[in-house]
Image (cartoon, rainbow, N blue to C red; front, side, top):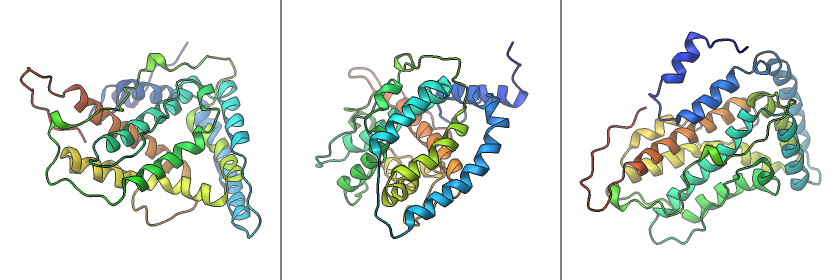
Length: 291
């Protein structure tokens, strides 16, 4: 029989001050209650942090670079199918959709630019088996580069002029994660196991770029905040100042806060999309965004 939640977790379950969808909050609370997060993660995280820095040092040596994207993809998908909890896998699949939507929102609302939209919307673990983990980062960099120098709008876009052409609302019913008895690892423990593998099987530049890409959260928040007239969105970006490149220190927390940020920004935009005026119907004023 499951233990009752603590008063703090019960409070988090109903606290919607931050615009994060309830489905994502519930997945996270279930993941937090996973026992492996509290007894296994502290043991593994320290050891794997040391191993990660050793791998990072090895990859920075003036040696021929190697990478194994296909092997990386297959190993992670196999691990997710057999050992990562369904809640953690669903959070991973949600992250693809939330970040793809955010970038597609920027593309759709950037005038006179021909930028190919993001198509990374996996619904199953198997959908991540090709090049999605590596492509996820590379697509972010491609979009920012192709959008070019940012030209802030003279005024925020009116709700009726915002375009949602390539927006795909996250449908949890469409995310399929078959359950196995061996799927017991929480999100953070799984990431502690993944991070050394990423460092080893990517080139040093690919891995350096991937762990610094989180800091583009601030740039994305600035752009979207100016488009929709919500400059306060930038305050929700934990990872900031992309011009300052960092190493793998504090990687787990920065990775997790990147996930929270994308969930928050996605929910803010989805709320605005659902409240957009319908032709022939008098629009209803939006309440201020939480946060």
